Length: 309
Image (tube, rainbow, N blue to C red; front, top):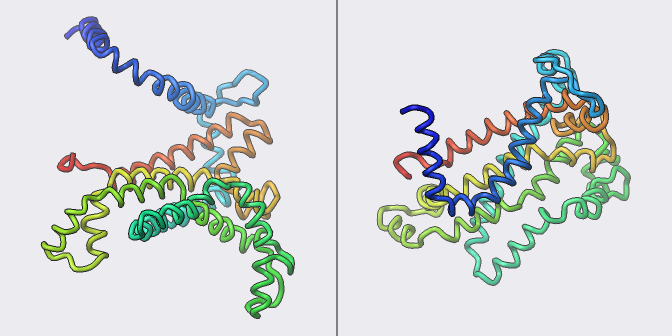
């Protein structure tokens, strides 16, 4: 079929379903303006030298060559720290969210509401909880709550610098992030568990399922794969974009001896402090690719198979 006829057929098809396209137009327009265009712009700028003032100058692959061969901050701190942080926080928060959602699903409706609110609230508090709870708790002097408690029971002999010592900063970042990880993904999994057909559990017992663990593995998880996928995507994105936690805890930017320096911090360092926008775009593209590959893995695990569609 000639190209002109194909375009004519496509235009007729679009006009036939014009009302449907009208309904999805707000999302498509917003997606294009706020997501697609910025991503394409970042990809384009990653091949240029751009400082925000002068016109971009084409440099080709030089930013990527420097990033993977000479950028010691990226190779020694940003990339390893990000992988370690994301591998622990992503799966750790995901598993904890599912386990907690399953436990709360066993409670009566009225009691469950208050427990869900209590566990979901930290994800909404953000910086407020950081300043009120975690900074005094992890303070490096003797009056810091954690140091005071550990000194009182004789577990340590002197105060520890939990957010200023490179040996402890990453662990402190992981602990705080896990505490606040019960966000929208947690609610999605709870909704999925509550909506599993009860007759499936009864049928499973007839077919030989004898334990709650078997019930969860063979019935609950397969029945809520869409919610599991959504929560996995949210956990991955949240783990990779959580770059401010180290700066907020330590009060220093960069973090002490770059112990909490993540890819997001690397992007902000070059983009907002050094004004090397082209190089910052290259780092952001690498981060985008890592998130994309992690999301593809989630689709492989929880996406609908052809025989399940």
